[in-house]
Image (cartoon, rainbow, N blue to C red):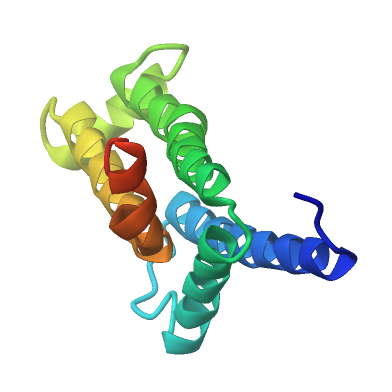
Length: 148
């Protein structure tokens, strides 16, 4: 199926909208700048609508499904795992481990960091699932894939 220039522009614009929302979410998690209304109604609706258009009108469901997994995997590898290694003292992060032990009053700094990273993962997954809700409702059951 050949796409028109207008369709290609819409796809690119929708991908930019989604990528911008994912970057905002990732930056917020990496900086620990938790704002209650990270995605207000307008920004959320804009992002969800972009995802909906990609999945329904442009047949990009597979790409959106893969993007979900890629974003989660990337965040875990580039942020969560390094933070846990530093907290556990691997890779020369012994100073951070000592600081975590001092600040926590014991040796549970690694567990505290694990809990923080798990909370970040749940928050990221929650927002991504909200953005790509259309996938779970239609594409995943039809394709017999694991839910997001």
